[in-house]
Length: 117
Image (cartoon, rainbow, N blue to C red; front, side, top):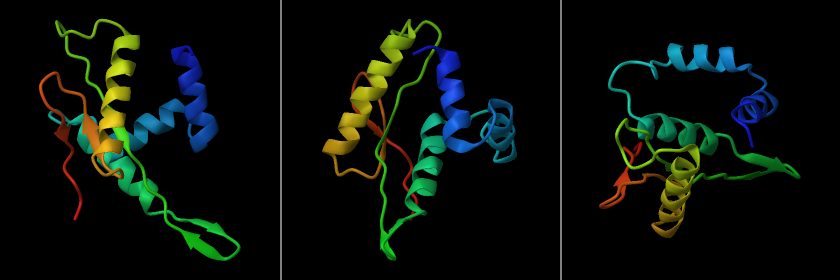
């Protein structure tokens, strides 16, 4: 899937254009220096969990497991496919360690995201 296809998918799923999505991220301070990807992913996880699915007037809780990988210049991940594989490994780690959490791929040991109380 191309990067443009990912952007189009964002618009289809959220109803927001990529520019609106970026503006929303800016409004929430996610583009501030020092903001970590795990912090943003944790915010997304909480938002997903805050909206149960309603079926036959019953509320069904929703949870989310999220894997994150980070591009660093000079780092080992030199292509999008490597970054996606690392995020996939982090996702499997999140599922193995209890689900409903964020994990960041690390070459040594997984780093848990800050968890909301």
